[in-house]
Length: 265
Image (cartoon, rainbow, N blue to C red):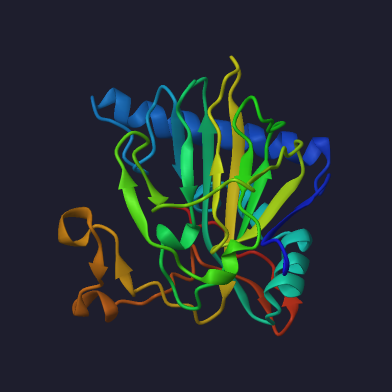
């Protein structure tokens, strides 16, 4: 991590564990597509989302007790402590991204900080393969070492519907296949992309992000200035940075914290 900006932990979860999680997230992903479609709307959970190619189910840990427990599992507690080098860590964000057959449709090179700018800048992304992610179906690619340059200029890419790094040279990018149950771990500053899915099956990933307790995401608003971005409005800064129900602690005083119960309506 310190040298390249990314690594893969192979077989972090058993086939049974990942199968149960995949089944739970499959239901949430189906609902994320079905609900707007029934209302005659596009899926709006992410600018890159489209029901027939790439679907994004936001916040599985707010909807599924199994996903909630998974995010706070001993594996992630240890990773957060060892990699972030922090005693107090929260779940910052989680989402499932399913990529259907979509030749020519990549998710372009970006830094996660380019989508969600927070302080401190360097938070942690854990990309969990729910099934085998290969070069053919859209596994991650990483540009090594470039995370050390900090935040890079991003621009909106109309063809993909996502943000991309302006003028990036990616000649030394590394293709990183991730087996089901394995986890690609990288910094929010690490430039990365996922390729097109050239197969007939769905590539499934669950993405969990972690940040030191005390982080602040009320800095930058990507939607300001007609989508060109700008500082967060003053009244937004007065709102809490953390929602304890969704951004729950996974570490406190360097010790694992049991995940909080899922709220029921």
